[in-house]
Length: 292
Image 1: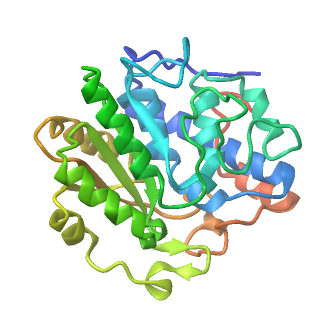
Image 2: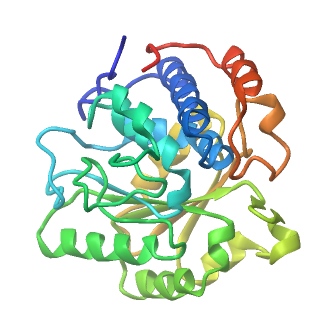
């Protein structure tokens, strides 16, 4: 039984290897949610490629030694904390804790709560998230702290598109641009769906690229389910840091990516597969690192 894959910051997995890791991450997601019949598989599956790319190729980070400050390392903040299954899988597979702990997801006394939290001391988690809209503010504070400490590493964040309906996001967006927080790379999981339906039906977001540009950000667009495209975009984003503007990546994804019956609908935002559905899902996702 495999527990981790190598994640030393000096080692960069190629596209094929990243795709293999992402497949295992997707297996972990559906198994976690099925095991407790609770959780959020849809968005987690859609963001598996992005988080795999970050942790296994893009970010400079190491699981040991780990501390909350992360001095000399890139930091990541998950703002849309309900997609914790993908976050936990990537942390485990990159060595922050044993993959077998994924079997405790959402269970009593587990460190792997439905939304990530810090009071259990889970390595890799630097903020409690789930109350949407707060992650960008926290990340800005961390990015400013790095500047004050002479630390040239970067801060990354991930947000849901439905989360942009929260006003705090736009206050933070103004602040980051106004204070030239240019060591920050944020990404939007732009799948067009949220718990109650399509984002455009719940509260239309309008032209997101124009909005972020108007707020003073540098903006890139990419396919969040194409590993090669993701790596290229993240590389371009890094090249644009240090130039006076925070960077935003509008990342088009598909909710439920990798499991055909979970795609093209908002219905799998927050429900778990039954035994038969789990079997069908796993048949579509190669076991590449070994199930926990």
